Image (cartoon, rainbow, N blue to C red; front, side, top):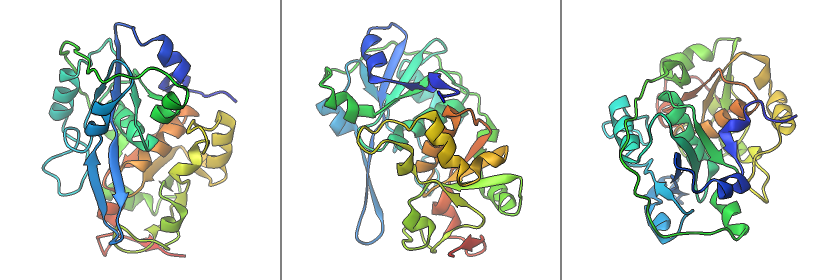
Length: 288
């Protein structure tokens, strides 16, 4: 089957043909994340890599610093409407813009920005299929020049139904009408690794790991039929409401995006995810 929502994913061919479109806004939003031997993650903005080379016309949006809540102790939490609107407006994104997002490493950084845009009411955004890796592999043009878009007015109107908090997740663990979906690797889901605190997974959750969503060679998304089969095998498509989670609300947006591709829109992201859940001894978890 083809995708139910093909407009949220663009190919490298499409982007190459539309680089000069007046209303196009391209963004690299890479974050460099590494898991150390001590089990802690190191976080580094991808801006330096962007400065070295990027897709012509692309700007850089810093998820780690500019697009995360500075007052929250947890990393990468959703910023306020005002903060998000200020950053996107300064980058030249307005109501008539067409936004294309990519990252140089995990696609989940691109889907994180896509999800934030959608959460704040902006629907004309797409992820570059295969991202920077595919663009480079095809020998397409690169640049070191930053764009100079005029500032625009970005109006942020939050859709609260797309964001889940701990209270909603607690309710979901006992609700047979909601699917709780873990995007973390199987080793974390199965309690073989525990980088966020207690071992295990949120009670009653199923696992579709983020790395299973793409072709390992090209980094492009699986076909619509393959995604239907993948999510269907875990019972995700049997219920109308889905809440995705991961370690810190990043990989969860990758699953959320893939579900949107196949027409499943009633999906929320538990933004704090295991960074909050695993540290609370009163939240239910499973290890077997």
